[in-house]
Image (cartoon, rainbow over the protein chains, first blue to last red):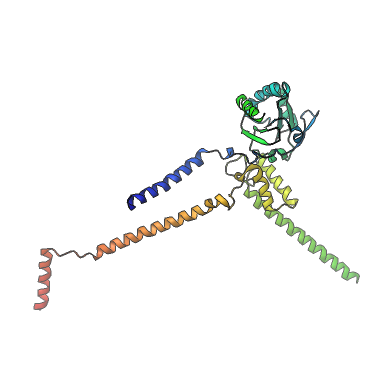
Length: 177
Length: 155
């Protein structure tokens, strides 16, 4: 290969590299970078249920997979996934005790969260994050809905940004059992 | 004696107030600097300092809480990176693979300047060479020159 064509291909390589980087930057969503919490112990928290009747400490649920869903009454996508999560709860949590489904509302008020839960017939354990958003910040949330799949050892195995689907819930449950 | 003690007490009070004001100012400066280092999770291209989104407000409150509890800037950055990843920082840390992001623009500028220098040197050399090249006179030009020189000799 002559020096001239070597130079040509060198320049082409640099240009194509820059175009590739630009295309990657423009087409990838920076918010969908893998969570640094994957493979780590789920941050522990204690909450009182939205109806005030019971309380829960996450670390006490070890031994059973947990589907931890973050939601808000202000979130449009949460309305679409609410019936999916409720059906999943009815079948695998309440029905078979294979999993615990938890819903933590954040940046919300008790009255709005309760109204939302009532409207969509949510029966699984629901609670409200504190005003400082301690749980949301501890889980590195970007928005709602986001769902964490925590295995029986308390390790976060998967994080879903956006609404959950029946296929995703079943696939993740299968991988955690 | 009482007067000296009173003066000393006033002096100490002034110094304490001055020190307190200075500490507060230092904390404010650190807070603003830290707020500016973190990206608002729900906005595009804004720092938590410039955003009023719910997450930005909560992140600002958390930073202030940690700072007032005595956490260092590095500890505060580490807290958020541990949960959000390096994405949450507006400037990637100058270490490991990220160093490339800091070095590459500099290398690019120097490489560009070097290429420009080489091209301009080649242009100058080419023009000089062209100027040096001797083009022979055409027969007509030679005749005119000879006639002109003869006029000098005959003068």
